[in-house]
Image (cartoon, rainbow, N blue to C red; front, top):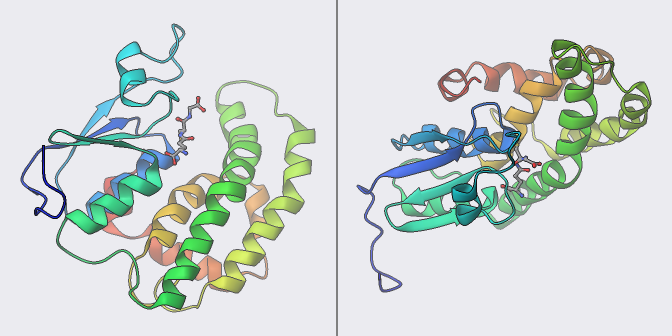
Length: 220
Ligand SMILES: N[C@@H](CCC(=O)N[C@@H](CS)C(=O)NCC(=O)O)C(=O)O
């Protein structure tokens, strides 16, 4: 058992349990890639017909992905994992030191977590793009109901971001790491075209961020 305050042994093996298609797994992978931390992605199928694998429920009692291991240190919940990665490993800092910039990053993460994920990913992307891929009929009612919520998400992200290189400031932050995997899904839906109209700042951010090495290395 480590004493708190002892340096974290960064050489221990990092394992990420999840699936490449998962938005939340990709957030953690982006953090690892941006910090240049080596890791193994261990595939877990939480939608298996037989249910969430028992060994995964030991790692994550709520049956979600990702779960994370660094040596004998275990975590789940994406916010806790990316915070640990940022604090424990050397390299670029993924959270601004300035209190107001940091608060805005946290606000954007909160919006993405609480409102945008369900709306942009499940209600629009999964319903429109994944359902067609799987030969299901889209639930038009669900999509229509999501559009005004999506508009609020996009307008708030635009208002809060500051048109520099990244969503907040001149360096990659958690705000970008959370937003990018959600945008990677949402932008595939035809609905994104009209919803993004007038949000040039956000469109420019997406074009820049989508071209990053970390994004191509984590593409599902
Ligand atoms: N609060 C969790 C959310 C993780 C989450 O929802 N992951 C999705 C995949 S992107 C999942 O495990 N879905 C399985 C399910 O809903 O049963 C976190 O921050 O890690």
